Image 1 (cartoon, helix red, strand yellow):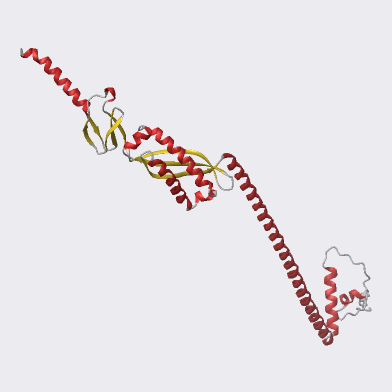
Image 2 (cartoon, rainbow, N blue to C red; image 1 turned 180 degrees about the vertical axis):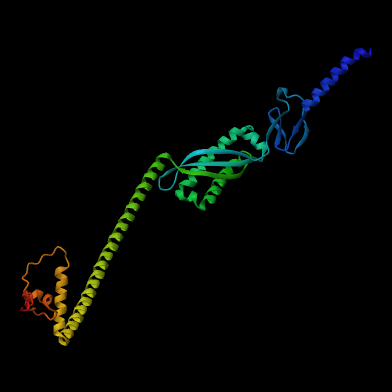
Length: 316
């Protein structure tokens, strides 16, 4: 009898375990749970723990939909925006958000995160275009960048609240020129730098020519002054020499004449190859004859004497 009840007891325990398992759900610290019964939201569990619901999810009975309870992020890259002045730029941005109203999130987008992010992307694109369109390009590179991100966040906040979301942060990661504008800007900057280099080169050449002209003028002035001083000193030296010669001539005219002649000899005979064709009686050689400058008497040839006569023999 007892052996016949054992299968029934085991079956009953199995059914009970299945009922308990299908009636229990767990919510961890990173999730929120939405309990839906026949398509209607019955409850939202936001605190971590173990909860119960009606067993089995057939016929749209109690079902549990989990949504994130942490900061979420999505990126929007290569947004083409036009700034004030007509130029186009590419912007990369990202948004950090969280699900703050799971009930509204379920009602608006059926708890689908991709659908919610798609709506936010559309709104973020429009907000970035509006904010950039009111400013110049350099605004995103200045202290105004933070105020631009705040404006974008304000625009997104209203749209996010209608989805049960809260915007935690909006950041602009990159602001760059488009390929066409970048090439045009590069060519313009290149032309500006070349023109600037040419201007600097021209100024350098002008300054170089000016300094060379100044240096040439100073060289001419220095050389002229040096030549003038040299001529003055040479004139003074000649005057002093003439004065000394004059005084020497007055003191001893004969010696002065002798000195001048010796100087003439030195000048004339300094070169070994010098050949002078002059008469020995020339005035130029008068000091070769005597120190007094007078001609010497001609040298007489001595007459040979007769040998002495032999002594006479004595007479016998």
